[in-house]
Image 1 (cartoon, helix red, strand yellow):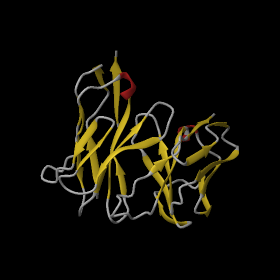
Image 2 (spheres, each protein chain N blue to C red):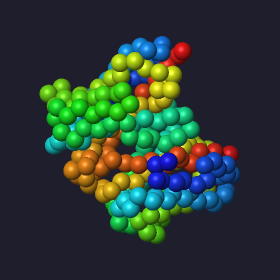
Image 3 (cartoon, rainbow over the protein chains, first blue to last red):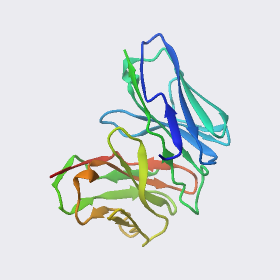
Length: 117
Length: 111
């Protein structure tokens, strides 16, 4: 148990569906992240939030819409996805986005395995 | 920009063999360096870290030394077990807040 909980663990959706992924951290961290992990591809950073403000958006298609209502919760809203969006979506948190002293260790959830049909 | 290059996998070893997974980096300034491990069906978890040159991170029998002169952070373990089978990621973080991960190296240990 890393202190970062993601739900659901598995999700199957059609291309016309709308769904949301949820991430909750119980570590008192200020920064939260969404990553996409596809088979045979590097880990892709999608979004970064610091104190509920989005600080990074790495050219992610608009069919992915993040929301950070408070520093403990992060959502990824999905709509009209494509089959190539099927992947493991990982949420992570860290004390701060910038962490020179403690090295900004990221704590990851177990991920949501998404399949788009 | 920053980058992390790690040894391509997959790596297959017999139990009790010696493990080395190479990692080199490019970064401005003085990054912190990490090894994360991902077991099947799970997210990444921190294995060990080093925050300055010549630091050695260690955990669960794994070690890595921050070598600034060779910009490397190679992961080693003297005797691997079947339970070490996982994907290993080398990563760096700079004071500017950017985290960069390597592509991951899959390790399979056979009994």
